[in-house]
Image (tube, rainbow, N blue to C red; front, side, top):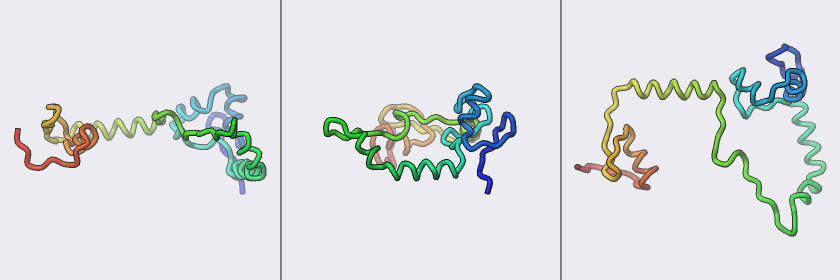
Length: 140
């Protein structure tokens, strides 16, 4: 089974595509993914390499866990960025298309009784902004 990844720039197959695009084409993985509209969370190593790395980690797990301890305190790692999610150009285009569809629809703006701003989805606004579950039969 050939699980190598194909480089979209030169067409060759690689186990470590990320290393190839940096050393072979002098671009970063992020630039590569943006150029070809690939998702940012896409892996640039083959499945067989991933399995080898997982096995190596499991084999030395205790050593790695010990390295996380410092002065008796365990480090806390948070997955991902600090509240910011990066999206690919393809995903951005899809989102913009959805926004355009919503903007073209003939929905009615509703005035928020709390902050006096108009919203298409008043219930969502009330919950997210004012922590209110629902408002029924209100009059202004």
